[in-house]
Length: 186
Image (tube, rainbow, N blue to C red; front, top):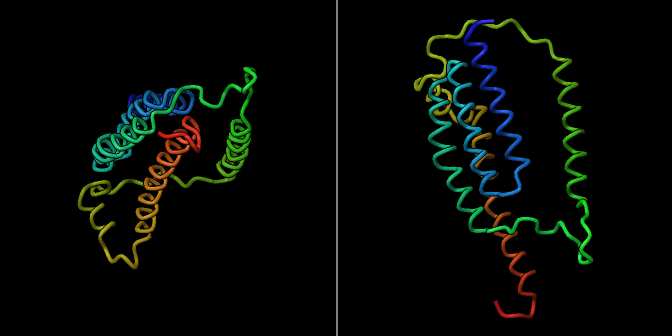
């Protein structure tokens, strides 16, 4: 195993570790910071895959802009830690949503594992010199939009961010409604 492969695997391990921390940490602000930390090994992996421009965009766009937006949304929502975990009689309970989430993760993990095990990967081809550079990415993105298969993905990403913001605002309004009650002044 070469040194670059070892560094690649270390970055991949850190990526998995930070990504798990995002899911496990209960404090949403700290989870957002773990998400920022998960983008650093992702950037290194892009550099190892000979895509330096995508790696730089990973830091500038995601860590610099989108996660700042996520942090502001999380701070605007201001979720109280432990909301919904204790029933009115004081007994701890496991929410049905957590059980459903574990079931979905196990199901999707099994499907993903079966797909990965059934795929035969082709031999690694040599990477062209212009691959991952600014000119190649610009040509790929801005060529004839009717023939570009990536346009739809970019548009879906903007709707995903919009859905996250709308969900955060609706959760914040639901908590305010729950705290003050429907008939009480806010």
